[in-house]
Image (cartoon, rainbow, N blue to C red; front, side):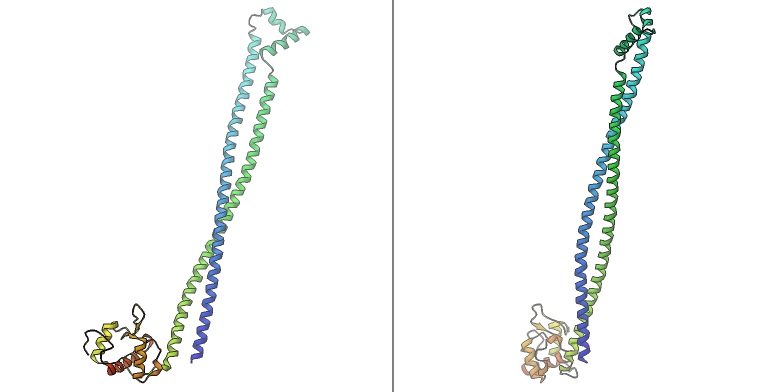
Length: 297
């Protein structure tokens, strides 16, 4: 009957070892996954900052474009008004001189061209310069818009990668918790199996068939020493069982009781009948001397 118990114990120990190895591996994987999550979250923050910076630059360029558009429009309107005003209000020119500007002769054309140049200025050059500036601003705005789209795409990818990594980490954590629970159950079952094996292995060495009746003195000692707890162990580990035997005293009592098979067995692991039998044997040999107290021998 002992062999199946040993095999069961070995099987339980193997299962426990396997679960311990799996738990350790999962713990390592979870740590690596969490580091990956942290790195992806940092990248997401960097991408978000880039998007914000690009958005700010686009807003600034748009303000400049709008201002330049308004300036072009205002300058164009002003130049047109100045041109009309210059022609309608010739200032100190006489009517004849003014009319000469609108004549058809070659001299009139030259005079009119010179007058326009002085009164109006080089309108074409001014408008061309403003148009060039506007085109450059629009180009800058297009570049920034493209870069913003790329940054937003990177931001979205970082967010998706972070979410995926976090989901994996959560899955690993759940699996780790499950394995730890199975490990705890396996350890408990393993300990229970080992305890059962230990009890079964000690069963053949037990000596007392029946539990003898304790004399009043020993009943008092049992209550005073352990409160009747046959598995009691003193805080320093030196005294065990209901009667708080030291191992040496227990071995001596086993010899006195004619039960040498109990020598070396921890008193708190012995059966109730064995503990009572050895206590009576020691009491019959030495009286109440092994115990101190007020139970009265």
